[in-house]
Image (tube, rainbow, N blue to C red; front, side, top):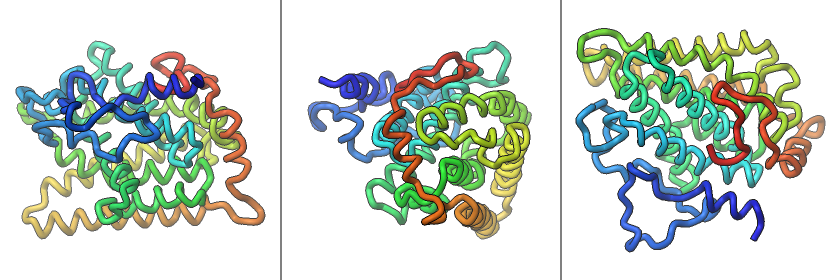
Length: 327
């Protein structure tokens, strides 16, 4: 039995311990990551809602600690097989897993967040938007996939863009498109009327420090050119962080617009604007990050990944050294 097969069996179970209640007798043995059905994890979670309810029996709705473990396991369920197969989806999938690992590190620092259970809940809802889009796309249900995500997944399928493009297309779909709906769904204010914005902004303290090890890992494992300019925009880590920070701030403002819309029609107008802006940004990224055959193609990237996808990440993250697979 190969080491890769052993690793896959170890890290890619289909049961989210402490959170999922799965009728194993009905569904049969848990499949490996490479054969696991494209089923969104939230479909197994009884009582899943986007609203934060601390008394809920659902660990993710209540923001209890087992939810974060479940979220990491689900993200690994995508990140590991895409890396092993050198799918171009591996870039964003791995980035998302690393950011969630870093969130776990920050969550365990006393006082880092004002409301840890709420932060856990929001983290899970945000992840659900990505995993739902991913599994819907893999299942061929394109109608259920937001257009910004369809553009990103199509580009990965067609090996159309650079590693930078893969990362940015995923970030655009998840921040510019998904995040406003997530924030509006979970709530912008606490029960006492105070804004949730301080905890939202606290995330940015580690987003910047995670950039360097993340790009180094991409360059070591997936595409040797991924960190040639220090970041996908070629502008330095600080400027890239400012771009992401600007996207996140825009997401918060769009969430405010969704929540404050006086009528369903007005909310629909805001939602349509969010979708359109994310699609426009995705199209711009396609124009700037696509390969230009015969001058450039994905061949060097794919060859590098085939030789190095199992390599250990070269730099430590805030949470410490990272494993090439799992979490």
